[in-house]
Image 1 (cartoon, helix red, strand yellow):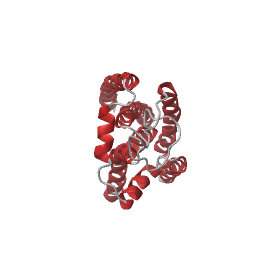
Image 2 (spheres, rainbow, N blue to C red; image 1 turned 90 degrees about the horizontal axis):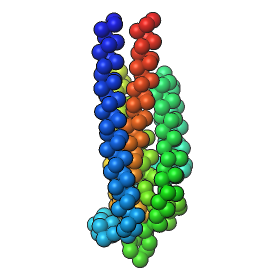
Image 3 (cartoon, one colour; image 1 turned 180 degrees about the vertical axis):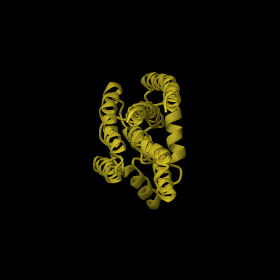
Image 4 (spheres, one colour; image 1 turned 60 degrees about the vertical axis):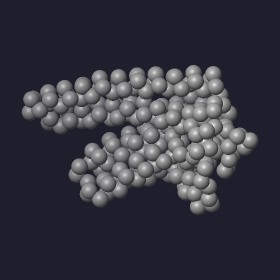
Length: 229
């Protein structure tokens, strides 16, 4: 039993070192983008990327992109977190339910990052604006939140080996679909630039790695308690 615990501890320590290096790399990338946007608030690259994403337009595509972004609205995010946390709690996965709730800690980080940059949203003279959005543009709050919340759900779907395969696959595919489509949704709707969504993805990944490290540390403590019993 002690040998098993030693192997688990070594594995988690190695992961913690890798996580720290990954977070530092993501932070450096985010800071580089911040400087770039500060020097060039409206770059040709951003405008051209928006034009490419908005090249094909239709009412059906408008509806789909709005639907993808709905989960990041105040109502959508609140419902998503509450439903996911409740589902895991009812499945007696209380630790996972707690960490799903902890994903809301990304929101004040997003708000602070937006205030620091205070970048204005794309305007109708440069892109097609499907609807007006509130608050600052950089980084994308939707992309950051989706990366943290749905990224964590995708990780749980992968880790919950005791769950039915269909349930794990459905949760994982749905979560990853939203993570990778919301950046295009935000640019298509004309509420963000390409650099906004890229920065949101980098920031979200850094926060997700931090959340996963915290979660794995809690798992280590729980496993240690089980072994000692």
